[in-house]
Length: 508
Image (cartoon, rainbow, N blue to C red; front, side, top):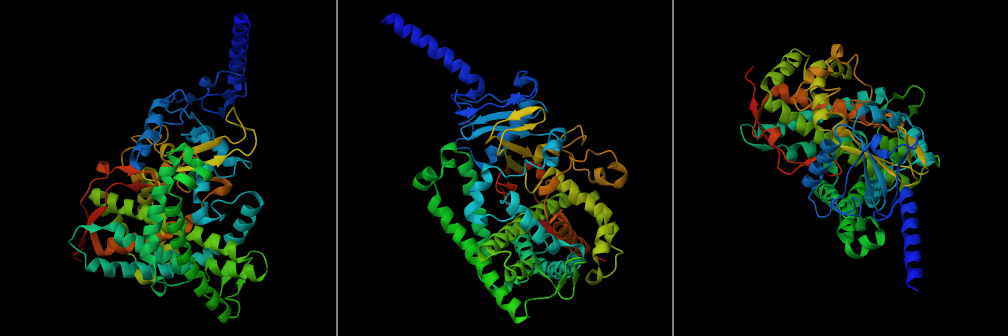
């Protein structure tokens, strides 16, 4: 009898060893392998877990700031090589350099967003950010004309109007320590509502509650990411912050619903909205993205739920990401007076602000470099994710079905191979003469490939307009140093501290 149990134990051990070649048994996930059959360690760095259960418990109960630091520690440990983590949901291939990112961004099959985007579903539905395959292609094709250059020119008038309103607010705050989140968040939300959605924010109640809801929901999503048990909906429903998530999602949906309702009435009052020539994107009157959606609804190409999804998506992506970049740009300009002086010299002889065109803003070269360097060092979206819907070969690796691919935008753009002294703020990196030999995927703040950000030109123009207006009227003075900031993961990049600068009127 004893011999039988010994033989059975030996067979079980051998069986487990065989199974463990393809599955990380204790982590409960399938393994990533090399195409050539070589040891995985030769291609990537495998990050050891804190426990025998893979990396499942590495991030449990960490704060958003500690999670950001943990990701950076993994990058340091991997010494520039992309690395692998093993979780209950599946193995995660983490890309941290441009060379490995290239094949992914060029892939036509790796376009489905990863599991973290599922946590956004109650907030954004299946809008352009989260949708995939046929639905994504249809929506992208539908919305692309709404961001055409000719339409962007009409948005420019709104950006200038809102920038002048921002200056009026700053008049009452000059010489004080200004929490720029208070003014920039409102400025950015005003812009996206009046441009992409065609509704003035002062006509809609609940903007302050909306901004707070986005911030709180972002915090809860990060907490959920840190607990692998909360990835499962039933456990999150029973033991997680489900009710709070639902509450804040309702605030967000109620606010966007008011915008849609107001625009719908206006749209039909104007005899189905303004007419647009799809081939030339010629705009007879001011034309918003929401007009495009309502026009397609009238043709039966999208329903009310689809409109809600896209409005929630564009409000979030057009507001929070742009606001984040603008705040970091002001911090950098305050901290580097020589750079700020050069920007001012570039714009001081421009025509009156009210008369500036899109072409004028495009010619503001050095300020554009400042924005790009800000995005390089503090990308609004520091990490994006893809899901392998089937077994996939990428960079010589065989990724099993349900494997995740994390693209660490923050690490890619701080790679010393492409950006010497990556922690030094040097806008001249992006002057034309210095970018000829730059790797095409070394600078990817708006992602790249087919799923790049549809609104990147929109964002750059909005940020330029605001900075030109501010710098012509004020010197931006430092209150805090960027090196002292504690960065945090959220839906977008955040800081633990509040962000302060001073605005000193220029003496002309």
